[in-house]
Figure (cartoon, rainbow, N blue to C red):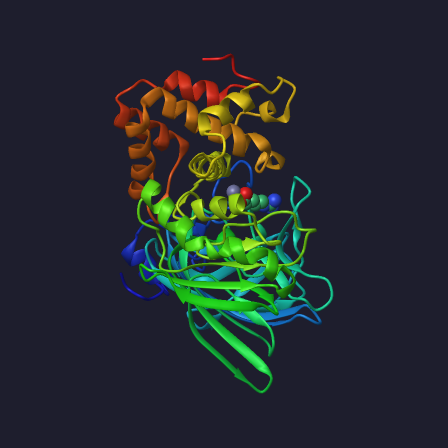
Length: 465
Ligand code: ARG
Ligand code: ZN
């Protein structure tokens, strides 16, 4: 691929493409990318007209004033002829946008940063977008009432940064839908005494003139919602596991005592999950433990889950399992969220079964006993229907029940082959529910249509199979 933007004059475009027809002579060729990648649950999210290969974010954060300033450089590839495109950005002020070094026009329209190229980019061309921006980031309130995005903690404690499903745009301009995955460099400067923790490997860290800069590199493709740059006055621990995986944990001192025993088990949890799901998909691991009970959830940030408080072991097992299911194998549409939450919940069940708890067969029976009015049956996990359902009980528990039903239908050997093959076939990429159903049928040689129709798609409590 060429590393250049096609700065076509109308004349050259006519000569090359010859299909401009009646377009005004000065009009750039191509169309604007789509508004949104076409996800019915978040119709505005992303732009289908470009793929971002890499984000280089250089940020400065002041916990006291909660001000964020930065430059985002997006290395992009056009996936159609483009005359412009939209990035996602909620709040913050944009100071300048350049494309391949030339200033371009832009507009703000709701969550969209609309960029007009003033010239054409041909399908397949590579180009670099640089956005200078700054301001006070504000988390979004999601349909279920939870907050999502850059969340400043009270006082000058720092920031909890987790963006599922759409909070990435509260802190950097992005192609914010998980259908597009990218590698990342995240460099954050904070006042001395604070640590800024991103995804992947810490490449450099230096302190001068009262400021510390941390440079993180994530080398595997990552969905924007899994990016983090959490800031706190953390206790930091860095070590290598026995198999040579670098681990970086950052813990708010107020949670250190509660977190220590569970975090010590991270290498063992990874080893155990590798035995079930195949090789750990990334080149680093770790955890960020904040001290803010108001947030009410953890997020499986790639390589470095962010916890709102010291996690219990089930939560550590859950977020670690997401590294395979969610982070490495990513949804292309949010309606497939059970592929993340059902699988991570099933990992908890497997862990409990091996550690003196009820096995998945008993968990299935206990849950099935819940009355038809229980929220467990409030929507089918394969079709959540409404954005507020994304992280509801059925996505987690009925998703995991679906996997146990599958296991009982195909037997242990086929079931665990399916899990490993799912992680391997879609590693660092995407997977859909239809693809999972096809894989399960292919590996087991069974017709599973009724099983999936019942457990994933039927409304209400399924009649016992
Ligand atoms: N994926 C997270 C988990 O591990 C939940 C994220 C919830 N996000 C939110 N905005 N409520 O279950
Ligand atoms: Zn989860």
